[in-house]
Image (cartoon, rainbow, N blue to C red; front, side, top):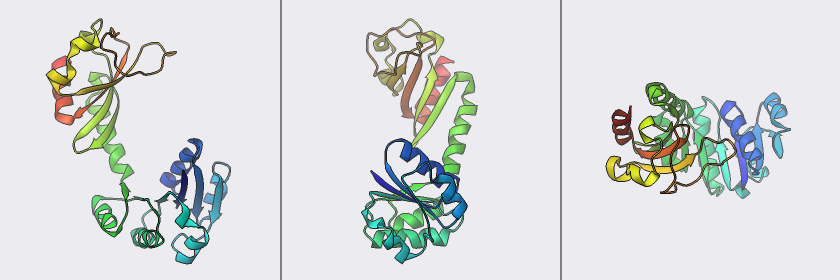
Length: 220
């Protein structure tokens, strides 16, 4: 996939590096020469230019990108202009980092396909990890609409039981998506109804937040 990242503050920098590590063809752009120098060895192409310049964007061949991600920090007006320019140039998918929900709504109206509010998402995730630490919660990912995917250590009451006997969907309205067995040499796998759980296994469970809370209350 061909991706351009416009703006290389922390979010844009790590986004560009990670996409490049995943095998995507990444072009990183910023007006700050030092930022461009720092990312040059991590991506296929790194360019110093003013990302808010419409003609410069055209010269970069931005219209040929599959995805363009925008991270211009606190410069909301620049995010608005960039989103408008990118849609005008025919970019298929525009992702924009925002500081708050109001900015996200405005940019969605202008034409942004994806809105990212990383500080809020990290705060929500961290709050869940802190709140459910006694439930041996290892990770949590908000899915939107009040749904979460969580990784949790197998409760003692589940140890030695077959997956089919748990009845998580019927009893608690949550879905067991994957199991990471205790053995480090074994990759996570889709739940096998006959698999006998160990207390060292990690369960990846998805469901509505309130249902996950109810499950936690019953099993703690």
